Image (cartoon, rainbow, N blue to C red; front, side):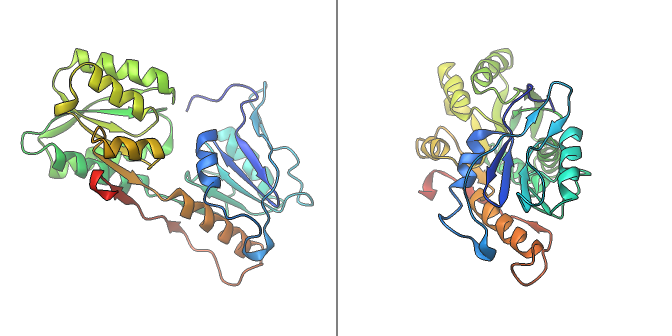
Length: 287
């Protein structure tokens, strides 16, 4: 993936457990899943901290000594520099990776979606919604090296080939997670290719995508499928500008992460088991 700029905030510190996430808006959404007060095992939520990519290209987790913080919940990019920082922390306490299973990170446990399966679900929805004639599909991604997005794309392509050969993924746009850029890129792609009838939104900028489609008069024949139900995407579903959203239950992910930490610290009985969080599909009539 494209590395963040030096000093970019990537990590929040929450009492005895620190929670990292590559995008602040997703941190805020995850935090809404945490109840106020104390978790099982005596885990508390307080405070905030930043983890950054330093000028020399190294990642540093500040105040990572065991005496100050007992565990780390990391929802961060699958980047070798992040892996190095997490391995250092893992020498002092358990690390739980959330959303992205970061390679070679020393993680004790992973909680998150099966992104390959999520891509297959998205592809199946796209193929069904575009029947009988099918057509060409544009995929919106953030960074080509993002592990989760690569897996989604692989699953999406696989199910289209196996079950919906009349529907084809013909282009993948890398937007760098820039919501404003997304709209301009989508508008340009649609104007250049009048055969595109579907958009698979696996990144950010859903509002800008829907606006671009409407602006050039293609809304009536365009199928748009996205991931993660946000208030804005719920509104777009109700307005039928967005056709389906696959949600990975981030609130549940956050709660399971704290449960796993409590077990790894010996504050709850039982062992932690690998756990893929189930997904839900939302459409206009879901509300």
